[in-house]
Image (cartoon, rainbow, N blue to C red):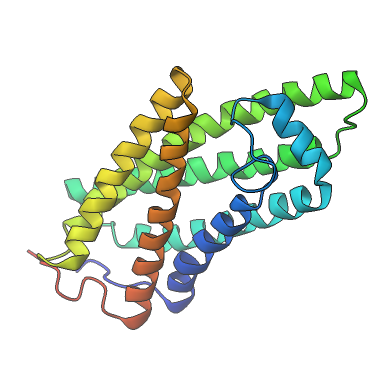
Length: 230
């Protein structure tokens, strides 16, 4: 019989990891709240990070920690998809995409430490930093696409484990949101269109809420309790 639950630590990781990562992502200089700048504006983002060094370093340390905790919870979900079926295969592929995306975001956080140390008054230092940011930007694009794809496949796979009810509706809704995020990432970076990128980023909030919901249901021991086993 397929595994139907996570252990307590894995469930807590699904709840805490995304919350911590999202909270400090919002505090990242040059992002949404602190000296906001367009995602492709290398000079503005480098200036924001170098002008808020301490906050940049803290966010670049805590975001990867939150992502690592989230990945631990996701690995627990992988056990739920061990059976040989199409939905389980979709879930496993989705989890792989999410882990790849999370690793990309973690690498980007490492580059943020370099950007935070930029000497703004030195034109050569700024030029080098903007080149580093372009690399970070490229990694971020692929990471966002990978995570969007991952959430789409994972949600579709998990939706089959629920009987009709809130759990199935929530999973299917997250799958739809993730398709929107995927399209917005691709269009936003291809045109480019900052509004589409903002739309994609807004999906982070819904992903986090769903991850917390999943972790909480497993923590209570009620996840998939009414799912079809046939």
